[in-house]
Amino acid sequence: MKAINTEDFKVNGKFNIKGAATTLDVETSDKKIADSLEDVSTKLGKLQDKMYANNRYSVLVCLQGMDTAGKDSLIREVFKNFNARGVNVYSFKKPSSAELEHDYLWRHYIALPEKGKFAVFNRSHYENVLVTRVHPELILNENLPGINTVDDIPKDMWKHRYEQINNFEKHINANGMIIFKFFLHLGKDEQKKRLLRRLDKQSHNWKFSPGDLEERDLWDKYQEYYEDAINHTSKEHAPWYVIPADKKEIARYLVAKTILDALKQYEDIKEPEVNEDIMKNISLYKDKLLNEE
Image (cartoon, rainbow, N blue to C red):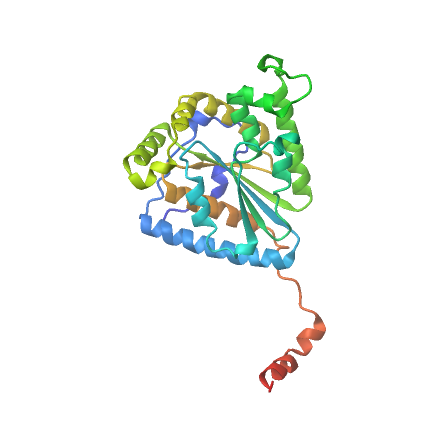
């Protein structure tokens, strides 16, 4: 496999979605990609165990992408070697009536991981500047003061939401949360193939919804708003990574390697030192256990 620098996928400057690749040739076989992912996933699982003992940092992984981008299978494959207590996955769908009684960030805030743990957001707080922007009528469900019709939505509302999201992420990062935001960049032709596969394979029919086609018709709007959101919210403390997603195996590997490469930079993530008295008496403790009657 050719050398990959995961920093190449990080959005540091102006992001142009039309110029971003949806494919990446890593010059190796699917088998070697799968083996490499297994190796990185195993290392991530061990690192999380160390983070749990360290109890200083937590990790938030946000996954965004168009329908069929491969978020579910990516979560399954990347985090399969984690201790079950160390990672929680949240799939954010249409807000419930209870969630709508709070501000739009509330349901995401209460799902944040404890120190030492990972949380994976399958779709995230960014839906509130993506789906609601494509479908502004959804804002009315939030029952915001002064907004009774779509025409009442202020033109600068999205700018203010970007600021709110930036402040939210800056706050949680300053309190020990390491944030990764991945946009699984899928090509429109590849999405078409995946939707057809859902229709062709009986075992996949349950995944298809007519709404998938309605959202596909809005492809250009989603692309525009993804570009806008990423440009406004990719910050050093909470960067966006744009991952070519036309080939699922490569996307999974890139996400896993990006997380591992970044976490390895934290030299203070290490197991706590064992109490000196315990170290001095380890042989005594072992003898006591071995000589039990």
